[in-house]
Image 1 (tube, rainbow, N blue to C red):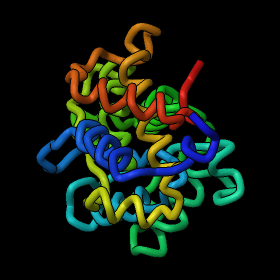
Image 2: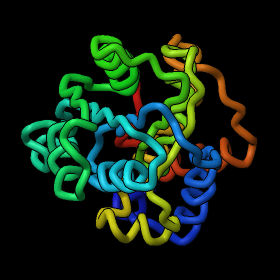
Image 3: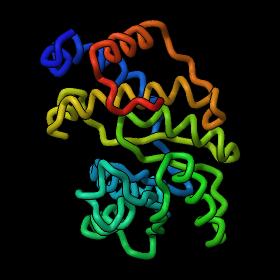
Image 4: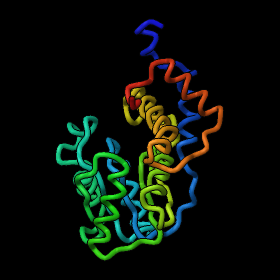
Amino acid sequence: MSSSTRHTITTTHKEQARLIWDYHQMGHELRPADVAIGLGSHDLGVAATTARLYHQGLAKIIVFTGGTSPTTRNTFPRGEAVHYREHALTLGVPDHAIHTEPHATNTGQNITYSRELLAQNGIEPHTVMLVTKPYMQRRAYATTRHVWPGPEVICASEDLPWENYLAGIGDERLVVDMLVGDLQRVIEYPHLGYAIEQDVPNEIRNAYEALVDAGFTSRLIT
């Protein structure tokens, strides 16, 4: 396959990516939780969604977690959690409701460090709402159930159709690469001891393999 072909996103690629997009979302019914944990990323919509959930009374305590990564260092130079907190404050969330965990560099650390921060503040939640990018729900859920099996876990994200999210990020290839990378982690992380096993239907595996073959591999782990 030529280099130019490998960098073209076709209608078929988008259809395959949409299958994976739908699979990544857990479809949980939202209900009040003891704490909402906003997992840091390149997507400031996570902070806005967490703020909205707070104002809706679905969580009285917020943790924003995340340091910097190669994909966020330029956008969030002070760290993902710090920028998320600042954005939530502009959306009317009071400072006393927000805890900031600025060191985590992966999902396991996001959850582990958030748990430790809450414990240091005398908070032992029975229900935890994970607020993530839409396509990170399943991996965040599987990771949390492995490293913090006690609380009930509810997943939430910005409610956006696939097409709107793809257009809104502004880099279609990056989004598809990340969808593929997250699915690889859902498949592989249980074998590495990082997450619980998730059922992956054949049509999802087929879409994943087709996108890998098409060159959407920049977020794969080796």
